[in-house]
Length: 505
Ligand SMILES: Nc1ncnc2c1ncn2[C@@H]1O[C@H](COP(=O)(O)OP(=O)(O)OP(=O)(O)O)[C@@H](O)[C@H]1O
Ligand SMILES: [Mg+2]
Image 1 (cartoon, rainbow, N blue to C red):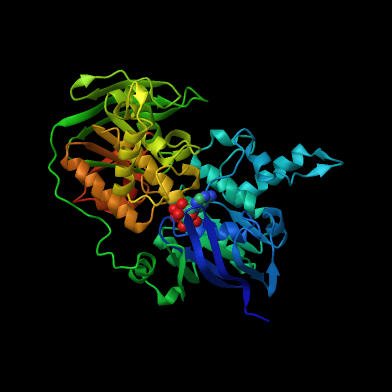
Image 2: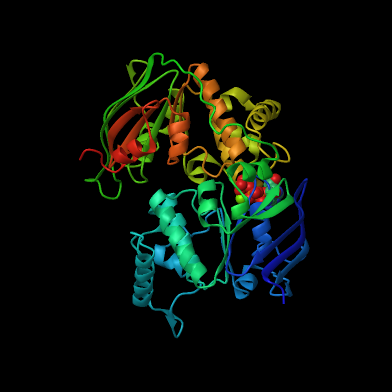
């Protein structure tokens, strides 16, 4: 009897023009939390899609062995029957259905074929309570933020009694508190003998929860290590193949003219128009500085910037001034004309058209640059190649459909699309979510270059290390208000958290 619950042997998977996995092995012990690490495009999601039957037997080479038995999964139902449940990186909820319908989809409590709504509601409420989630079971999924959607997805997976639970970047949209909830759930599952495979770009989570880690690089298996044999540097070395000297390229910036001024700005909830999500905010952003906006999820940061950008559906009040003149921005098109670009946190909603190519996506908001009444495909390709190379997007070509890129590489395409508009004011909402260490560094360097070129950069981030590492000045929001302002030289995680949780109030 093998000591491993799961062995994946010599897995090879090719897509047209891409060898996503090349003879990859992984052995997993029963009851452990096994991390899977690697750069964007290394093959992590592909690997677990093979394990969970998304890619059926026959579409890859190699074998999946569970408790010494070779498995030939044709689909995800087959793998679920073998006890494998996977929470995929791309959320798979049905937007028009409620939270409870999504959680028990295909698995609803029924009596003689009729759905028992009361029981469904009761079960969902109990589950959400156990997970400490404050979500209404009747809310439609489309009205939830990405973080909450991710939690609903996790709740759904927990109803399936997994023996092997796979989580592909489950925390990219979660707050620290929610991450802690998830870690506790995983510890509980582990006590009950459940085996977990955990994919994340966040090292503190890997070191907190994993017992061992396997590393992929460019589709190849690099190795597996016990967590006590690893530290951050050695893990990065195995992932990237070289040492990374620093995480944050801090440069000296000199603040120049005032560029964006927001006066007495309020934003109201669309569903509940008496509720203020952003409450009388005043802020100034200058050329030549990176302005960081920190705060807990739900503190109004995303609503603030999307309303400035004209993309927020609810009512707004107050004024937005650019270069000393009052603006009228009612839509993203208006905002783009004023030179504002917004890299949104929800790339599927505002950022990307998944069915279009890399080059079509990159040029989508800059059609004036690649067309002269008619579209010039050569220009489109020339421009998009520039950004693909600057951001090191891993793609077979600029004609590849964006849906076929890895999650992190899709995020890079969104950034490229907005860089191409040559913005005067670039607003980035969680820009490095799902992006690997090396690529993060490249993005910070680009931000520094933009600062040198006179662009105003505003960055929302829930990653405290990132806010501290890259901002020149930090605003902290809490409950719709700006609660504190810190120069980077005086800022610490503790000070940010003090303001983020209400500060002096
Ligand atoms: N359906 C597909 N068609 C073509 N190529 C694909 C497809 N799915 C993945 N790829 C390619 O396979 C490679 C591995 O992608 P994968 O999604 O497994 O990476 P990943 O390690 O999960 O990265 P990330 O950290 O960005 O999520 C990438 O080069 C990607 O572009
Ligand atoms: Mg992935």
